[in-house]
Length: 390
Image (cartoon, rainbow, N blue to C red; front, side, top):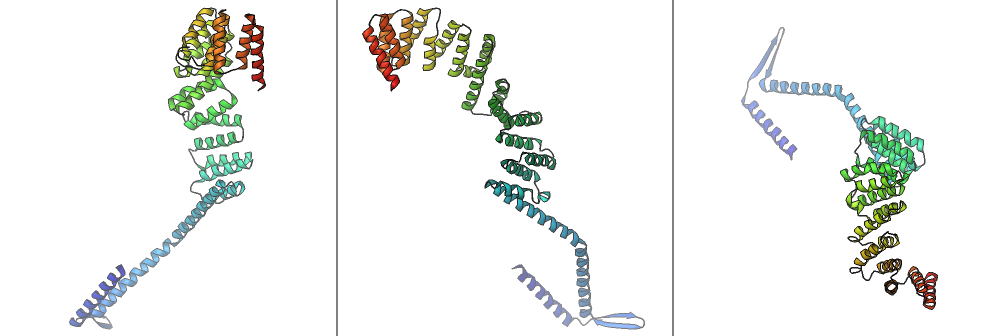
């Protein structure tokens, strides 16, 4: 459409000039001794216009001739960048398809013309890792670091990831410790450190990281609770003194203290140092709010100094958990300890009526022997053995 408009404008101008030339009979006289040149005004105007066009085209040609080498360099550079992008894209595609050797070759090809050599080197290092070429991997990571200033964190994280995938825990830990000096609060650095410390079972270092985990909200509530519980269970288990365990217990967050596994480990530590009454009190307070059958069993196994109080506390739970066979079994054993034979027999029979177990049958058999009922005791032993065989 534009070219049509231009043609129309040229035609109109040509017609107007023609009409002007017909009406105007003027001439131009040029005298230069010994020559005299006489031209029509129209023809002179055409010569001037043609001369201007030739002059303009000449200038354009000279200007373009001067810039042709620069444009040629730009074209060559653009072509090299295009080839580098093509190699990168094909290399990443081969990497996704698990063609490690071909991927590494493509990623390194034309890398000197790549607009993002860091990506090429990191991806090539990953491909080398998958081929088991640790030295080549480390060389590529070193080149990645040199290729892009300020890439320390990215390169270190990639190196640590690759080392972890290859089972090089100590090397990965050293890499992450260096990375942490650069970015001490980087979320992924902290997550990888947690993973390594967990595999190395370095619970003290994990314990040091817990405040940062909570502050930076690295995990959801459930994952964080699982992590903290695991750490504190291990710390309590490895505590060499009761005071050390007590310090962990007093300083841990309240939600963690409400974890049954953590409480169970702390109770076991108290029992290890003869703090039976403290253990009973801890279990009683917990079970009053949180029901847990494993802790109920543990409560029944603890030998408290006040047998009557221990049984009385347990009886308080019966109102809410009257159909819990574990509680009934524990009540029966506590009654035996208090020599309340009738209550003990009734609770054993109630527990067995809900869920028969070999341990309850044996305990009831022992009680019946104490009550001088050998026939009934033998029957209990037989039923218990039958359950075990089944």
